[in-house]
Image 1 (cartoon, helix red, strand yellow):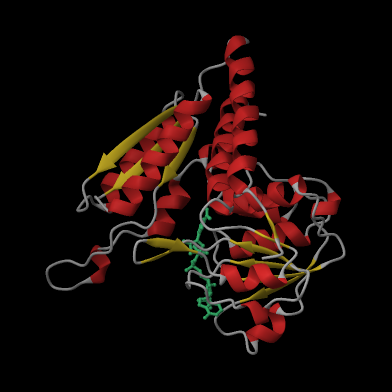
Image 2 (cartoon, helix red, strand yellow):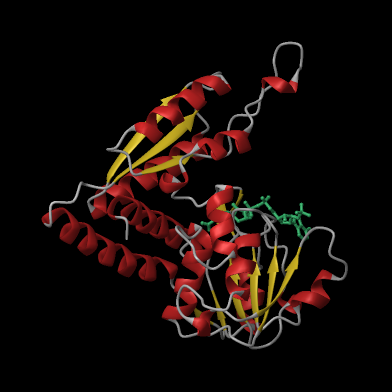
Length: 300
Ligand code: NDP
């Protein structure tokens, strides 16, 4: 293996330490203890683990982490009521709805029994929308005057900055166009004034997806390749330009292993730098969620 490993775990620890300091100073000055409330619907084991990890991360930096649990058969109006109450509660600074919500149909197979995830996310007060999913917050990001930054893209850019891997003027390919990862990271890397300065923005960005023709041809042109697909090890070594930086956002369970969207061993022979899975982007996502929660509490 020749590639440098980009250590997301260590970077996230540094960021969490900074956040813990910031919280301490804020509370010492008489500020209210920041509070993040997660809404967890049903008993999906992966969602429970994610919420538990977020809760633990909150406690470690001095943020109050709360969880509102609702049964898998909770109705949309029950959920909207809960979000309304959290919006109105001045002791709650950040609200997140753990996704995905349980899939369901009624007894007649009518899918209208399902909860409209978009309507639920839209109901969160944008000032408490620490995942930065609301149309208001996405619009502010697109105009380069963000209130909150989406956690995974923000974490990726912080990682690039920590390892001094600038993107300005470089060719970036993002594979995957989800609202959570692909689209916002493409937007942030193409921006003029990046969150970590203009050197970590100003890229020439291609956003690829499942309908992109000749995907390997496209990825081979990337100085920086970001994979956010959700397909285990889909991106092979020969899809990567020699000397490229590879950011693997994917987290896929294969048997009892977690793997990314990139075939790590092959890619590490070609790339100059690469994130591992686990221990790459994942820990940064949670760290940036904490950062947004502190910003929501302190108005900073
Ligand atoms: P989504 O399923 O929402 O989006 C996947 C995207 O990949 C879509 O745009 C889809 O294209 C595209 N895609 C699917 N198959 C192909 C293909 N064969 N070729 C090219 N493009 C393809 O996923 P997310 O963005 O939510 O998540 C992506 C991965 O990142 C997952 O493994 C997820 O677990 C992980 N993740 C990790 C996080 C972290 O903290 N590290 C945070 C969030 C997600 P189309 O739009 O055409 O359907």
